[in-house]
Length: 218
Length: 180
Image 1 (cartoon, each protein chain N blue to C red):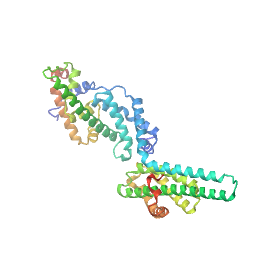
Image 2 (cartoon, helix red, strand yellow; image 1 turned 90 degrees about the vertical axis):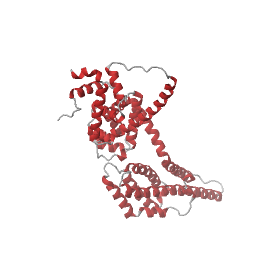
Image 3 (cartoon, rainbow over the protein chains, first blue to last red; image 1 turned 135 degrees about the vertical axis):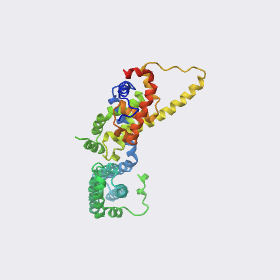
Image 4 (cartoon, helix red, strand yellow; image 1 turned 45 degrees about the vertical axis):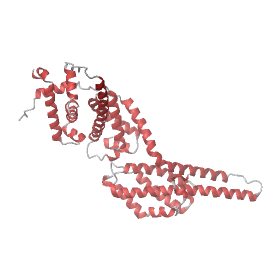
């Protein structure tokens, strides 16, 4: 039965006539896309900046350390042997120091990241996968840099770095679309717990109020 | 490549996939923004804002509904909130102008159908106008409108019915056009 307010003739006439209401022009696709891309790029840089700050600093220190290491390795010995040994010792000590700074910075941030990942996995069932995946990719670059640095020659640290690399690869490949109810996230956290990676990580970080653990140290 | 794969690539940071997703949906988003805003600059702003929000929040898209439905929810939110801000701003300007124009006679509306219809639709309450534009002008279903506006399908139908009734009264002078 037709509603008392219904009038098919009026409705059809209204639909046809209303096509002139705010009739859109051709979509300015390119102009809008250019602005969207520019704004997203700006936003992306701003978003990453606080997170990337330490990673960039750690990478810079590593590169500096590698540079100092290579430079000292190629220095020809000249003049008084005692002085040369003293200079080399002092440079080596400096080089060791920057590696320790970089390694401590890196390990502290990885610990914070994994702790946050595990806590979030329990609460939100993988809802923040995309964010963690992006952050894991950033950390992964530093991990690989660490593996290739003299820090990677320390067997204990190397083993830890390899565990972390594997873990970060898994997190970086998390896909919120296919992480049904956080299943993949659960598997990663189970792996984390079984391999005791967090306790190992914590024990590798120097205890106490080490100045290099603060953000502005570098 | 289906849309879910495309969305996964966008989530992984693939900007080429972002562009493909944008191209697939921008026309409908822009059309709706333009229909509701009636202004090209505003429609472009709203469209841009819609896509920026959508890309930023893609992590929260669970795929329960179609991507287009989710996107149109963002579109209507962006457009309606944006128009409210514009309206408030314009109202302040109008109030100032009115203070200067006391005693000046109001201009009569143009007698032609197009202008009268535009005025009648503009004068509808926001909810009625949105449903009317989405359904009768842009062809959205009541289900799509319900999801986009966060209302029941029945509410969408009721609002459309009331919108049409108001327009019928406002356009009574033109009754001959639909009766014949």
